[in-house]
Length: 213
View 1 (cartoon, one colour):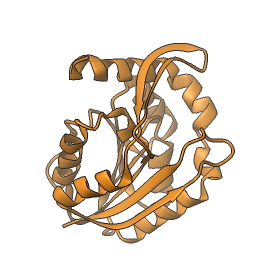
View 2 (cartoon, rainbow, N blue to C red):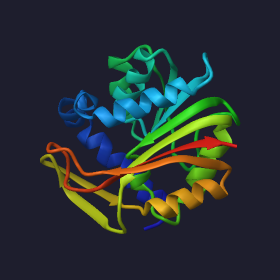
View 3 (cartoon, rainbow, N blue to C red):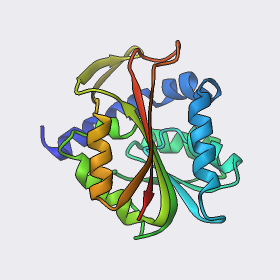
View 4 (cartoon, helix red, strand yellow):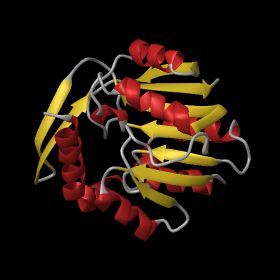
């Protein structure tokens, strides 16, 4: 499947499940203390007044959490359905429709960025281009927080919450992602792993916090 077809399938799948996604996951951060702590650490190290990008923002709940923490936030997502839901629920967040391989932002526009479980829809071959795009839009000294599932697996869904979809979930190796960040203009300052919480899918998860050089 070519890049265009692959990304179209991801977009269409998230458009399909957008309403159900909001119902099930709109308050997921309430049950993720580590995520909240890392987001707070990112904000503490971000220049006051700088814009923080939520890359692959879904319906915008993480971007809204950042706004509640005092940040100016731009949420960017491939899915029009997700973005429309976010615009309706979170007027304090600016939303843009865009692909992580072609981020709709100017060079150095953001003081920091987060990508929580959005890189999982990119194949290993696509990761270098995506990370290069993040390096382009995050200004020097800006922080970048990533979370993803650990491993080399590729999981495909044809059905999700009772809806027909066509979507791949790529697992990644933390050491490979860290090396890619280092070669793309970031210094990795933290890498940690955790097991899933009881309400999550049974996978190990990695978090990397990096600083733009």
